Amino acid sequence: MSVTVLAVDLGSSSGRIVAGTFHEGRIDEVEVRRFPHEARLVDGYLSWDLDYIGDEVIAGLRDAVRMFPDAISVSVDTWGVDHVALGADGEPVTPGRAYRDERTNRTLPAYTARLDEETAWAATGIAPAVINTSNQLFAFIAEEPEAAARTERVLFLADYFTYLLSGRLGWSRSPASTSGLCVPGADAFSDEVMEALGIPRNWFGDPAPEHVVAGPCVVEGLESLTVVRAGGHDTACAVHALQRDLDRDAYFLSCGSWSVLGVLRDDPLLSPEARALGLSNEAQADAGLRPLFNLTGMWILQECQRQWRAEGRTDNIVELIRLAEAAPSTGVTIDTDDPRFVAPGGMVDRIRAALKETGVEGDLTEGGIVRVVLESLASRYSRAIDALNELTGVQVPQLNLVGGGSRNALLCQLTADALGIPVVAGPVEASVLGSMLAQLEVMGSLDPVDRNAVIGASASTVTYRPRR
Image (cartoon, rainbow, N blue to C red; front, side, top):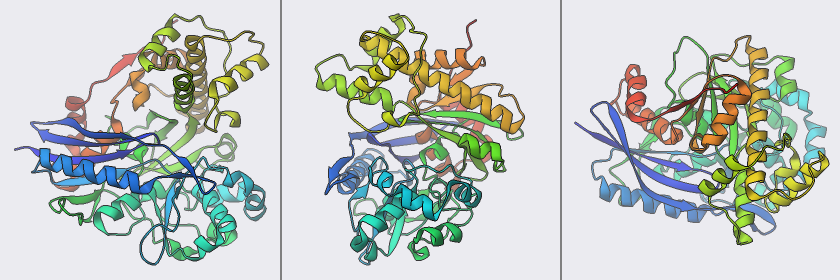
């Protein structure tokens, strides 16, 4: 007997709808629809086109149900921190504001005057950052008071699209844990933080456990589907697709636009050293936590590609990696966490300026630029792993690298070299596989004790060993 489930996986540059059929101990995936999207300026604010994304999701699900009429369920995962403010009519009161918008920088002095970094860390266990939901909502209230006054509820992005499909409000624990609004462990919102920032507590319900049914789908033509909360945050889904020994900590790197590097464990890491290093204690979708570092990832390379495309130069990632492999190393890295690399546009020029500051003269080729970016990411991963070794008191035996970055053989090898430990690359589409595994478990089609075997049968991995 076979069972098909549907995963809606939304990233910050594209979205996709994937069908997974579980049969004879493995999941076979079929990508039904993929669509690009990007944040654009609307009324002076960098915003997501929620209507376009929602229309694409529903169109993709209708295509999926036509192709797989026996599909039983669907779940949505997205990136963290972004959210949607709803009015009394249940509709968004503004376009979906994007985390890279400059408004949180403008309001940061007033924010920190009300909630300093040490207090915020103690209250939440989340590294203070201008992209956090707490900062975004403070800026929303300060800069758009009329829209804030019309707000009745605030949903995290994954919960908003779950609401579109099911009509059910909810606040999933994994995206809530990224917000800077929850107590450590994300089992409750922090009244201390909300009171300090003037964020109405009634905008939110209580953080809810995931791996549960949200309700039947209410969209016309999709009524045969059950909407499941399989993990609202994409990294929470991704780590559910890792083969792991539950008796030991597992270390992971989810590499996409952001690099999320951390460890799976039961308890948060809340030492002063963890705070100083910028650690965030985010939640797994089923149980436990993901103490992690949110690091800049392939965003820098994606922005380089965008610039080269506009200039009529090489932007194909396969060709760029080939050029990078052939390019000599400069022996110099850039600080990928430098704020200058956060904003979109002109990324190649900013990298060249940073390199000149370190003494690298002349303009590097596309391959040289890509090699610098990848070597810099690998160096940053190495420092983060060293920090986790210190915080946990356990030496990392290997690193599981999942997501789009696991396709990049040069990045994987450079990371293994920098860390001095094996890097196991894959599954590539870990968020999708994790969502499907969780849905099958929630719907009673898969026993969780068989999860490791199903992952092994469904996903391919490649091990990169450090070179001397």
